Length: 156
Length: 270
Image (spheres, rainbow over the protein chains, first blue to last red):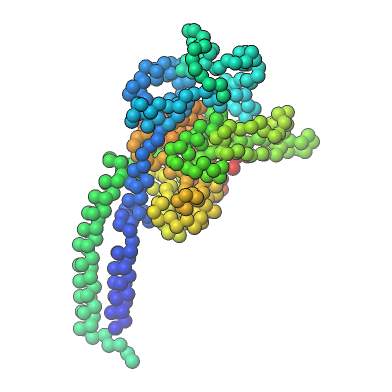
């Protein structure tokens, strides 16, 4: 009788466990293995440098040769998977605040980084000018060929 | 009364047991076939978690505190915009000069992280002449090998994957918040929209597609170096970095064995 009872309990437990544990439980460990695929199935928002390289390889080569070579396109231009999927969706326009986000002087910043105090910076003193008047963001050490007076950049 | 153990009853029970096992085996097999179909349909094709091992190294000397990583993380992972919900964030450490004559190595350490560093850092309240040293430290889930959060979860909704990520299964999380309390690095929060625990997933949807995590992608200073230890690529920046630098992990005395390691870290960082 006792043996029968033990068998019944163990059997009942096994059957109940079989139906109550989620499928794919224990594939990799003590959890639902299918969760990995579900989490991984989300669509990326940032496309990555490779996606940019498909159309803008010329610009990428320019950047790779200059000071900003370590910077990814999407650091400045923002999440661009949507733009890669549909070129009609344009990335947001950039402003001076984006340059200052990294280059504004700050005692916490490491010494290797080029930093400016906006008030002391050559052209900012006279007012009304933008970073891109003197610096090309893709080749920061070079100046633009002609002053970009016509360029519509909103001051921030 | 003594229960009788006759030969018949013993055979009977044995027979039932064998029969039950015989029924269960094919059922289980059928289930595994269905399951494999389901799994392969949702995961990116060709990604086997047992064949990768990811590692992230954070170089404190290279962090410029721009906050692009924290912002990219929120955009990529649809994290609520509130100032307490972060999968990754930047902390500013300001170490003061010791009080003259106190004999201390260094003065007080002040840590702040206004909105995770997304909007940049306002000038520190400590006057510049009192600052001995100041630097930024990017923080994220430490992807512990022995995760306290995994041990704390009562429903098995959070787990260590074979490729070194620690993930939350949003379908099984009950939102009890035990893991939020258990994490010694403060890397978890309860999402107010889904009411489930959330944390850095190492951009699992990106790394399984061969992309880099969003924070690594946008980091302008190369402060975040990410790579696969099992499949080093040609001229792997991670391998080169590991050869050249000395590494430390946060709170090593807890025995969590993090897979997120820091280079050039000061003793004050915690």
